[in-house]
Length: 177
Image (cartoon, rainbow, N blue to C red):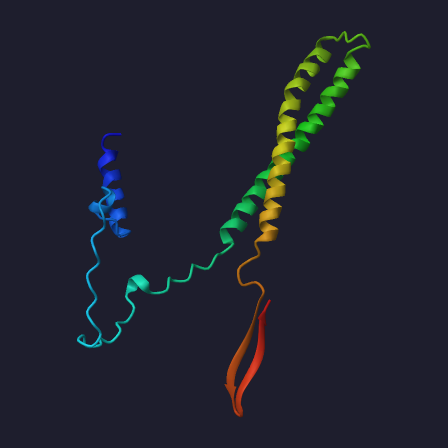
């Protein structure tokens, strides 16, 4: 924390100087008077300088591509699909264990060894089954949303083109598909 204080104070001083605040302003003294402007009759007119790089227009932002979003969508869809396969398999296993339990347990819930084993296995499978269904739903949902909302770049572009022809200029409509 002690090392950050000099950096912070240097940053505050630099910010204050960039805003035109002097030490006299910061201590509450009256600001220094601005230097008098020379009279226009005695000063020769200087041509205006070209804008510097600091005042130039900012560069346009890079074109956003949806390639990364589509890739994440396909990966999410793949994970969701694999989880759906796992959910279906664990559902089939749970149904089998439930039928074994029902066959080897009576109405008073007294089971033989096979029914008891199926009942304990059913309890462990249902947790995995619920998690697999949740991952499948989220993965497939997010994957489809990303793939469908981020079309392939340049897949459908339409442009109005002005081009020269034998009698002057022509306007045409071009499209890619």
